[in-house]
Length: 98
Image (cartoon, rainbow, N blue to C red; front, side, top):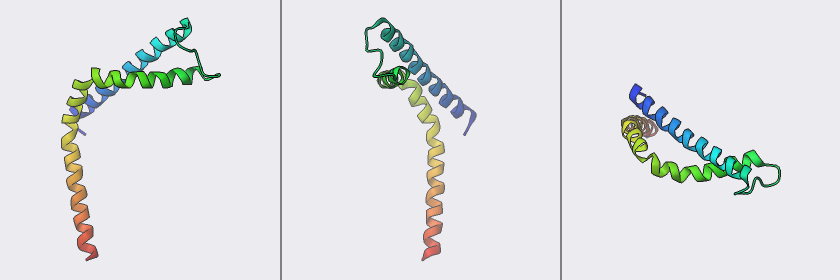
């Protein structure tokens, strides 16, 4: 993996985690204030984490589209090389079994 690919991947992952953390904090505040249910049983942190995952996914899908596209453009050549190697290995296996 090249340096720029690693940087784009880490940047996207960091931004995705930041969106999740922001959603978690906002939902925790809303639960503390009483706007949303504080928990289901005694699973308050787990409930808020699950809710933050559900809320942050569509936000990230829209807000991080440009970063995700940049990351995929940089990763695409690596995937193409891996597919070529896989196809070459399959060809070698087919020749060996015939």
